[in-house]
Length: 253
Image (cartoon, rainbow, N blue to C red):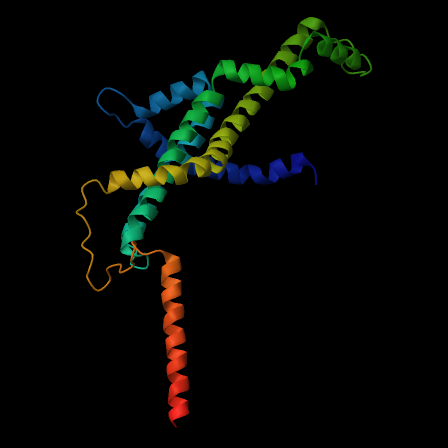
């Protein structure tokens, strides 16, 4: 099946979907908060840099999801009756440290990787040779073998190549920013840092807790003043006495 036929078949459904979205969009466009319309700010940012706006929207949705998940996990851990009382704070602290680090590192990675200077260096290092002067001459030489494009002038060719570079760079920025935020920060850095940080988070969460009263029945009776080898000798002596006592009873019988 040709792509044109697929586009023709799906066009009515796309039109219906656009009509369904039009009414709520118009309603949101007319919402005012003071003197400002939120949708005007959204539109201005999208027009200024649509790639960065879409990437930022994706990272924002991930961060909001992780924030809600962090709150739910911490609340669940603190109220989970299956976890021993003395372990709940640590489990909740681990959830809090994990969620907090996810949010901070994802935002940090996004603002670092999406920076224009960083993107320019990364893109030039990986794909710069495909758009430099030598590559441009090679593309123009290839066009001479094409009957439809062999008469294309440099003034027509270079704007097309520049637009292609811009589109590839926009896609590269989108992919690298999302990858850095959701994979590098969330799946690599957070697990490495969260566990050591959980102990400190537990101390902070327990700063107002009262000391736990230890019951006399469960109090530790281990004799820390007596060496382990002495206890072994004591047990061995008791077993020898018990053995001789049993032999004496048998002899009497």
